[in-house]
Length: 286
Ligand SMILES: Nc1ncnc2c1ncn2[C@@H]1O[C@H](COP(=O)(O)OP(=O)(O)OP(=O)(O)O)[C@@H](O)[C@H]1O
Ligand SMILES: [Mg+2]
Image (tube, rainbow, N blue to C red):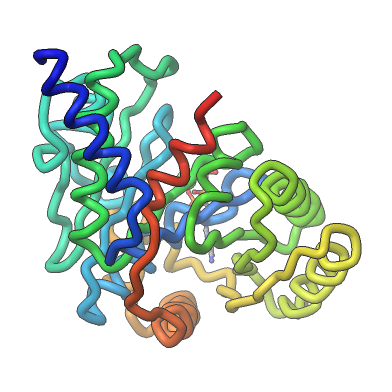
């Protein structure tokens, strides 16, 4: 690219990054401990929102261990890193899963993020900014754990939902995430889903306990948005590589997730705001 042209694109992109625009609401779904149900929730929640006439994009952000395409039984032609490397455009990577629902599949077994030039980075940001304007919701299936990337992703989202199971290890790890996100990004509100709940447990007890501690020691507000029972339709639909809300719409898990989705839709409002990716980029600046 000619230097002048590159400079111009850079300034246009930076201006757009900071502008308030009508952009998608970005919901990142995370957990401290792995295996809490994030990927199943992201996919099935995305489906419910799309059936409610919202344009939804699901991003598989587990760049090393992609999962969502496996849950759907599909074999993507291109994946996110093909776009990052500049081999294809972002539109080539998007897969239309259902009406109103698209997916950006991640790569599997890639350890190192590709090295890219400053010019390529600007092009990437430009394409991603365009994407933000095309959807109502962007759901990000974040990898488990407390890596710097995950903490930034959760902290820059409009909402981040933590998924916990009733196991004490899962609750402790969730608290670690809440603390790190708060310390590193200042984000002081979290949405909480308690997943895989059996009859002997009251999920609101778990939410209350976590809420009390987060509020007392960090001043972070936890908004408990619902629970999902332990339901064998979830592993069964994983085996069948089809989303459980489609295969078993009247199951306990589907009814519970529908309730959560309706709650999220009721607080959703179209408004102008700054770009999620813009916020993320700023946090990554040295
Ligand atoms: N409500 C539920 N009832 C029964 N099984 C469940 C439920 N939710 C999730 N599972 C099971 O838990 C396992 C992990 O689910 P999933 O892959 O969605 O978790 P994850 O948080 O994305 O994991 P990872 O951290 O590895 O990305 C799956 O085998 C799934 O079938
Ligand atoms: Mg997962």
